[in-house]
Length: 484
Image (cartoon, rainbow, N blue to C red; front, top):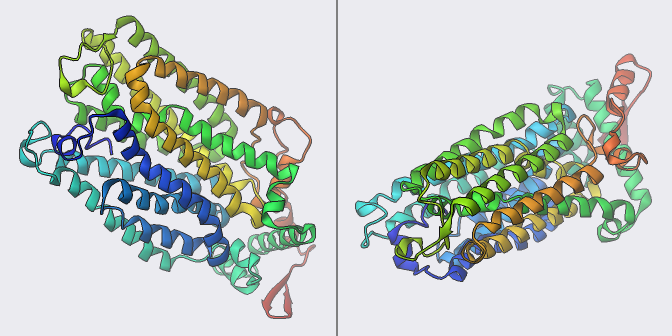
């Protein structure tokens, strides 16, 4: 969206001179995503995670008919995908690289944002460039229209990937489940110790859940699960309240207030940094863990926002309203070039920090801490929180830029401080643990900041199977078990 905000074609065609109108346009997609997310778990539990992602792709490809309605419809697809893709990835990935696999989703998102931004940037030069008052509407129609193609590729590509083995087990399709596990983790060998150990863990977890009984809603509201639901909802909320929303949606406004002239090109650097700095998270999230990523990220982003607020307060001044193109903002720092560059640099560092910490981790954590029976519904609630706050901020930020100007950075800095304290008190480390071990992690009785025991039950079980001291019965046919 940010790549077309400054083009004359967009401004003249949609007449987005009021702050509420732009907020509604930007927030429409997040609003649609909120409702898509809430419905995603029902599709994923009944029709599989794989089918839910395909439906999301097809829904997203229709969002170009009308701006607000089209963005809302596209948002439904984005909501379903954003909730179910991490669940699918977490359910098929080995525990040793689960964080890395789920973080790949965030990296793919950053690539999509980058590519789309440069398509917008290139299209902005249609008919003499973004400052031409008679610029053709192709300047925004081209970048919005090409979004059809990646959505179609996703829908088609999902036909060639397996269903989640854990979802198959939940449907009592045990033979299919172990064959998928074998293909994913045992080079097709059903008798591989790692495959058998995972199968045994899934089977025991399913048996325990069914014996406990209760509907998904009842299980979600039990105290031991409700605390996890609130935790993941909060993590997604803090992810939005970190201030990244400001940087990605309204970087144009930040650049304008800092007196930057070539706004679109300068803003593009943050998208490159967003892609590049997600790589460290992919490589090291399973080494340094989820908890340190969230703690250091919140503290660093808070510091950078306070620096931007201080520079803007000391060196800025009210907008004299002599330039109509700057009517969306009320505070300028254009008379001090070094300060303007420092503000832009802090914006870049902020994006780097988020990309390496909260960006991937806020999607990884919710997808791995719930039992199979409620995983899709719990993650959909957490993701709905993300989109609800995304929608609210998309609508509110233009107004905040005009009314409280530089104080908006202090507001987000305070949110990051609250996030730091919340993470310190409640987030438990999950690296190296299987999805079936999360009950032990959260019910150990130890405070979150004291960490968890090292090692995994799966590793011990795998060794015992390899040594022949433990046998596993596998359902390869209805009412028939084969022992390995």
